Length: 518
Image (cartoon, rainbow, N blue to C red; front, side, top):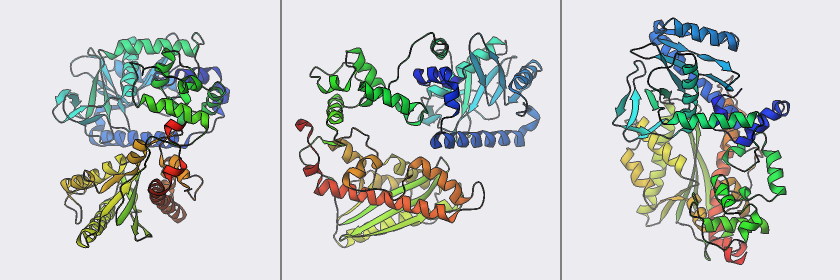
């Protein structure tokens, strides 16, 4: 039996999950996956309580302590009774089609007896723009929204198509093939028109069912999903043994290469032909260089003869720590003046979400702008650095919006002026432009090449999520030791950024080979 998640999952993983379930049961759980699951569960509980507190009389709630078969029977009984909204809906397993599914809730169509499936997710479902079909949380009335545009989420669309087909099977699907998704903001329901998605869904289902039943062969190939897959150690060993090209050209790029007869790293490294017409993303030349670097065993390769990064008289390295979509609780800084560095964190230990986050952000911003102004007043240059600016930019702008009017909070325009200017430097961008990185471009992959190592052997963004829960006491008493651990981790991140950019300035050109030298 397959739920909708298997339809967007790696085909080889579907095969392994179904062929060797006993091995899967004993596999260690990925911490990041567990945290995302816990966050999603918390979001669903939040939405459930919101609905039941405001309009409990409209809801039929399926008892989640019942067996799966009992919940499915209760769901169909509620549909037959004409329930307006059904929370915790489970649909009967379908041994013939291989389908298994559940929805957070079902909404009865305003004029008719059928139901629309709705899911609650912990990722964004729309972006600023226009054209998304959007409905009020409490009344199903999809209309084009002038302020939202659809955000591509294949997994949501496939899950809703899966549920719609299951509703069809029992004659309780709405006449229009629609489904809904509620995102983290819980400000309405993004409505998916499934008209064009159902045919693709049917093909996906047929393929994954055939794979699960052993009717179609699969083979490992590295994709983004591998990072959190319990089967990855086994697959990586197989791929390394045959020097598979996906080890250096991940995902769809490997498929394009196989289509032109390139299956191994050796074949890609030796390739001298034209770039494939359907090359999906990234530099093809860099892919060839990555293959050469893999064979040579070098961790980085220079694209340019002279490596450079913006430097200044007054330098501040910045690293932000956030918890899911709840907020940014820590802005860590490292001030560097005349060769002397000082770490300073701006932090709130009130569990997110909290108004105290605005206080800590305001203090960080005022301090940063004061250092900037002091540099200008003394005729010195100034630069602030981060590594991969997307997260910092997101929370700088979001904090300005969320805490507008709070003393010390900048306007969105003030934040924009700073992050769009030359004094906000992304070291990740400088690395990307000047190096090929066979093992990845993350700070924890690149900084060790420059000689920096984190004090905590378990340091990672995903691990810090678990530390934060303990630090603020989400699940018990706050743990002061985990607070110190987070501060140490954050300090190491800003020091790593400093060490990396100084290494780029002083030693990288002498220590790292040029691509043409491989």
